[in-house]
Amino acid sequence: MKPFLNKRDLLSRSLAEVLLCVILLSLLPGCGGGSRAVTLEQIEELRTMESLLPITADSAVERYRRYEPGVFYATYGDLIRGATVLMDSLNRPLPPALRIDTLAIDHTFENLGEAAKRGHTLSLSSSYFYLYESLPLIRSVVWHEFGHVYCARLRDDQVRRLKKLWEEVRVTALFYVFRDGEYSENARFGGHPEDSPEELFASAFNLFSNRPEEVVVRAEYVTPNERDLVKQLQALVKESLQGL
Ligand SMILES: [Zn+2]
Image (cartoon, rainbow, N blue to C red; front, side):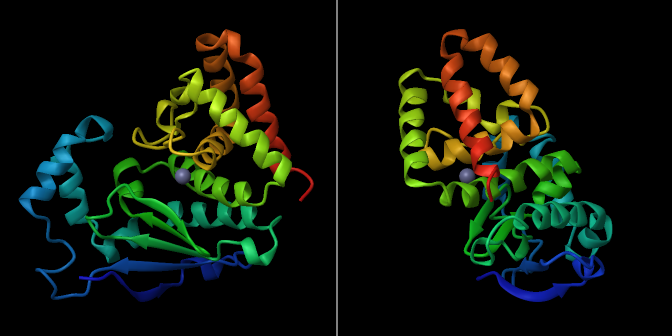
């Protein structure tokens, strides 16, 4: 069963400035009992990560079944519009070649909790909407993914600084300070700065933009000796947003 694009949504077209289109990703009807089918194994797997979810695994499955695409779009139109408006503003300073021009909402159960940038498309699991029902949360996911775009356009000297910072954060075991999921209004499973300098930047890009006070206070509390490291990372994020 391969996801396919079967519908263009008209929501974004009502926003004159929005350059984005919103598309729907779902499974081919008739395959494996339709897109609402969830296996017992999948439910069990979800239960193992229940502590990271805002509701129980059973409730998540119930919502997944309830929010089939038609109901989903009727219910979460405002949140989807909120995401496209934010994407539009984060796109605006970027050259066309780097812009994300499509928001693909993935309704498959397999990809629950997934968010990723692929080429010019931001693919976002519909679960972010129906599990959290929160614009700040959607904003944090969009900011993180755009962090990857802004990271890709850092100059060579900035990339060198980022790599050095990532190494210092690794040595001082401070990745958890920069994990999106540790902060309010972020998905608990969000962020994996330990994976690479780029992931550290994307998480920092989100946190310093949306939770600036929280991240500075927290960093001050747990890492008073690493004040400079936190400042340098914050400065790099700032620079990436300036001079565009
Ligand atoms: Zn990332």
